[in-house]
Image 1 (cartoon, rainbow, N blue to C red):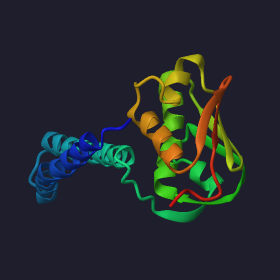
Image 2 (cartoon, rainbow, N blue to C red; image 1 turned 90 degrees about the vertical axis):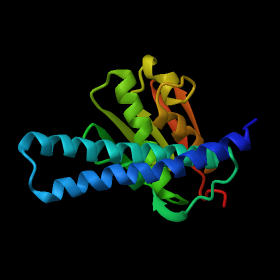
Image 3 (spheres, one colour; image 1 turned 120 degrees about the vertical axis):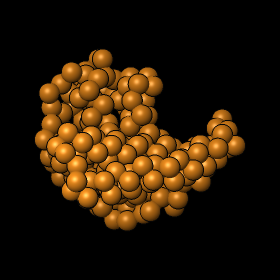
Length: 192
């Protein structure tokens, strides 16, 4: 059973961490805009800005996990096509098939599907993976033996995959591994 007090604590921590993060990123952007930095210093400031963006993304993910665990997740439901949700700008992740319109939290679900594919890549050693979409049934392959427990969230080695499972289930979907394929089933409409 989830501890709502702990979930609230994590949400508050994510919120409170945004202020110092905004200060760091803000000063890095200010320094970058001055044009007075040398090439080396400009690279360092760019690294600070990029790291700030990564930290902000991690805080967003952690805050979402806390809302789900605390029973306070209110998905922003919109109509979206499942094939479009599976598509990724990452060239190592393919998507093909026939989509269907579902009512879901498109942003959270898109990020979750990409996180699952990335986990299969990182933990499975594949150079590419692909989603096969048949309306509300999505199949990701290959998912190697080494990546299976990570992709399903059973092994806590990938924050994106852990959160992906929680998001998909909170939206009324399910996921399971069948051989070297991860199967995700989505409902026509996520619970409101």
